[in-house]
Amino acid sequence: MGTSNHTPNNMQQYYDTERLTISSYAEANGLVYKRIDNDIYVLSDIAYWRITYLKEWDSFVLYHGNTVPTDLNISRYMEADYHYQKDVKPTNSIMNMMVYIKRHDDFRADEIRNVEAMSRRTKKEKAKYAKMKQKQQAYNNAKVLQLINAIGSLNDNIIAVGA
Image (cartoon, rainbow, N blue to C red; front, side, top):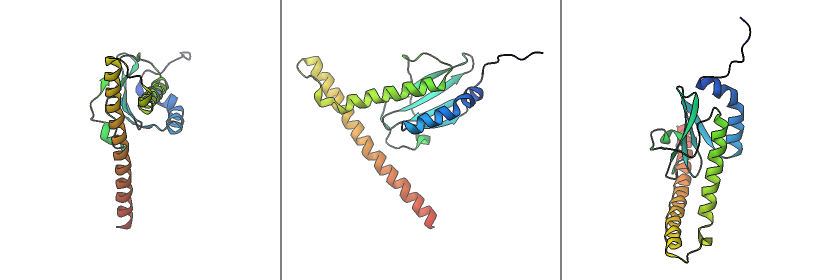
């Protein structure tokens, strides 16, 4: 028969189509990712994510972890708790998800950096400020742990090479 305009209908085809774009975008934006079967795990210094391909929908959906990563080893987040990111519509584009992740994390990082600029006049504003102060402290603690874990990983590699 004649040629058809077949569009990808499985994870491998979608991934192959966007692989180079995903890789360069991740590298340029400080994102680490790993594909396992129908999932792509994405890690930034502020959050961890899972992009899942649902064959029955022929679409990708996005899941998010609520705690700041304390280790930049993506393998540690494959069994983590995730929730469905309901404000992101299912899509056929992995890159759409990657762009959303970066924008979301930039927004959250900006919130954390600007806690002191928040208004604290009303009771509601004071409560929001207190909550953001806790998030800021959790983020700062996680950043320290990321550095400690990175140094530990380097030491493990040095010991392994020297053994």
